[in-house]
Image 1 (cartoon, each protein chain N blue to C red):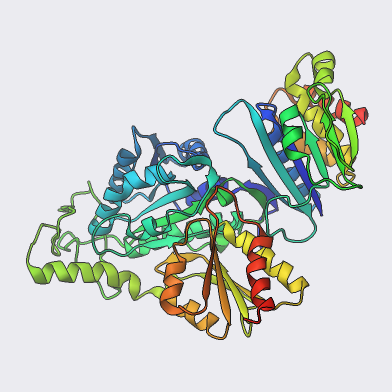
Image 2 (image 1 turned 60 degrees about the horizontal axis):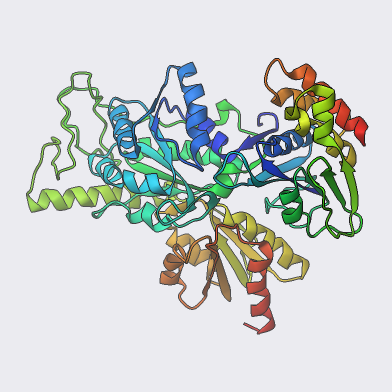
Length: 173
Length: 377
């Protein structure tokens, strides 16, 4: 069972990422549950999305013990990166996360949003880049399955850029 | 057989279930955490010659739903607590005038506007007694995304079959979560359509042997008067004591005599279990996980998941729990449905409540049983 927690500010596409991950997992034959917690605001704040992927049925839908936390902003990192253990993983977007927490987990800091801005001209693609990073880091789903899930979910006409974004993320790790 | 596995959200599945059940009319006023249901039906209904109307408020939406249903179109609305409060008067009208309708309430924290994006189960008693007067009601509560689909079809079917409003009581946990489902094939579904009046001499409120009157189709020429006032078989107001009593008896009996058809639950490992956890809706998920945690400690614990919460399944709960030493009932409220269990198992039932906008943890529920085991209860 893999338990993933994704966090960032509203508008960064955190929930979309979680949905794509869960869809990829279902396509690969796993059970998956995706949940989120967010405030009433559409932008800003610290939103959280979670995915549990398992070969068994999943009863409780929320993450109890994350294996991987991805933090796309400082507030999310401060608030939701607790509870990680030695073999777990904390992935942060160093564009926004400047202060790293005290954790036993392995930390991977990557310039995700900077990459989106510089290589694709828009910060908008940072979540799909992050998804590429996460997809490779979790070592559960293959690249093709996850890329298919990305393309099935993104708006028509943006497939090529999102495909690029996904590949950039996958290679960034 | 079932369709291919896919990831669906509870609210999405609920909208798809309504479409599969034959719903062709939705009127509503968007409110978190139910909005996706309206959003999807706004897209999908026009594709099947259905109608979607965003009304000026929740009261008007309920009125539009009843109007559509009177014209023989399966009609539903979706809301959350604040809107559910506004709809109560017309839910009573639907009960009195016997108009099939399904009201979805995706519960959030209340009272009042409370917390829009956080789950609660605070509207359970309102679902039963929110509208005034002696009426009965059916309320179903799904515990998974798949059940949002299958139970929604049951809800529409029951509304049609018994000519009654049905409350589809969800919560934010189930409404917003996504999980993998394999929906049944369309051929596997049972779809119920109301009986309609075919002979112009038939009275619109004359019950048949099954306790239900066939419905007049409004606008097709049959003389049909609809009122919230006490009425007789013609549908016109009548204040005679016998008629009034007979009418109220009818409203109650058409539900109460069909409990076997209406009541749904799932009992897992309850036989000979010393401890049983009863739950419904979102808390079922914590309860099931608690059962699994207890099993790992070799504590035998049953799990009873209620799908029909009104009419309350007194007989089933009593029979299933009669040998248990303790029954734990977790709810995301200060203790509502547990009161019904207290009526039948006053010495056994222990409530466990959380009402801070968080789904309770499996460990919290398991601890109640663990402590009882330690104390030898």
